[in-house]
Image (tube, rainbow, N blue to C red; front, top):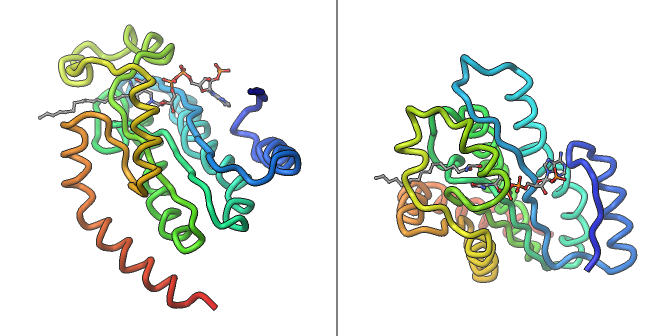
Length: 211
Ligand SMILES: NC(=O)C1=CN([C@@H]2O[C@H](COP(=O)(O)OP(=O)(O)OC[C@H]3O[C@@H](n4cnc5c(N)ncnc54)[C@H](OP(=O)(O)O)[C@@H]3O)[C@@H](O)[C@H]2O)C=CC1
Ligand SMILES: CCCCCCCCCCCCCCCC(=O)[C@@H](N)CO
């Protein structure tokens, strides 16, 4: 296993790294966009830099990686694109307005991209986990507004391995939302009804228009 370091805000760096990896190894079977940050705090008490940083890394960073990797996967006709959003990308959580926006953005992007790539055989899956035991959660907990902690911190936090394994399983069976707890899965199912129908309608249109 090898690791390479880059800033996902740098689209050119994402393209250069992915291009060199594709040249060496061929198109990826898996791409996981997980880089993210959280800056908790009530919106009116936060500066614009926090909103910007969360959008740039969580949302635009995700699109930079996908833009770099997807063309070779489409050409290969296979592969899984997985993105890590959040339960805060399913519903609003006070104290997380900018974070929620960035994660809703990831989910909206993925929902549309999934339709666009379906005929090419490339799957798109989004993880919407609750609190997960990582350094980010340790950073976030003391900054989470106390008034919202009874809701935002209501569930037990999951081990990252559980979240990751659920995402892989969901992608492998062609599912869209990976909601790794029963409650979140129920919420995702309720909310996704219309999106699921609209996706099928659009996939049919795209398949028909293919030369
Ligand atoms: N932990 C939680 O409770 C939850 C997390 N999530 C999401 O899961 C994803 C992973 O987070 P998690 O593992 O918890 O957090 P961590 O802080 O533990 O890890 C985040 C990773 O993102 C990287 N990263 C941050 N900024 C950039 C950047 N500009 N360019 C490249 N890499 C960057 C960090 O790299 P480095 O260390 O080098 O800065 C780090 O490896 C995030 O998108 C997060 O929002 C979703 C729901 C719950
Ligand atoms: C009837 C009530 C049912 C409620 C079920 C859902 C409860 C879970 C609330 C989840 C709050 C948001 C988690 C944000 C995780 C996250 O992205 C940050 N930890 C990032 O670091």
